[in-house]
Image (cartoon, rainbow, N blue to C red; front, side):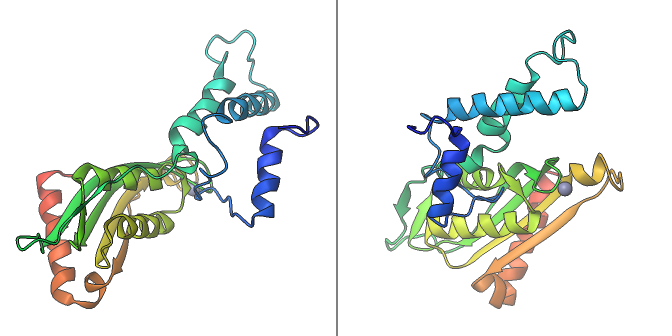
Length: 233
Ligand SMILES: [Zn+2]
């Protein structure tokens, strides 16, 4: 980057604004951040976290547990808990499902999720049940979970997360009949605020037949029930 008076994040933010690219906590910005710029962004975030820790009056110099925490935080945000913002969508090769013996039934995949709430940056952990009526393409079973986790590893609201998963699964499979049911516990309710340790939130997004056909909807929830009996949350 040529303008040395600006730090890298500033340059990238200005570019996204010029492009009218939204960069909310739950948005993917992989077109603007790749592995070449990540190390510099991590350096920048490290310095910023150091300032936060200093303001919190945490001794980064002599407390052995607090040494290096700023860099650990910076790396954790970019590479782990918010990786879904910076990484491109996982590759999900689609296989044709259009021969005479194509699969026409419902597919329900259970995906474990770890996310983070946009409001407090507290952990969200739960599970998504993703249902589709197979269309002309199929993707590998593990890809449903990879896509769901890619949507989850950002700052999210659970309602948005369910929507994002449904939209991305529809995109990857070409299916118009998609159902997503997310069940999660929220750190921001458990660790602070109301301190409710059993707070469980459920959100459902139904598209196509999952929404309009009572039989399909019932089959989806029956399948979820079967999965839950098999693998309790
Ligand atoms: Zn929260």
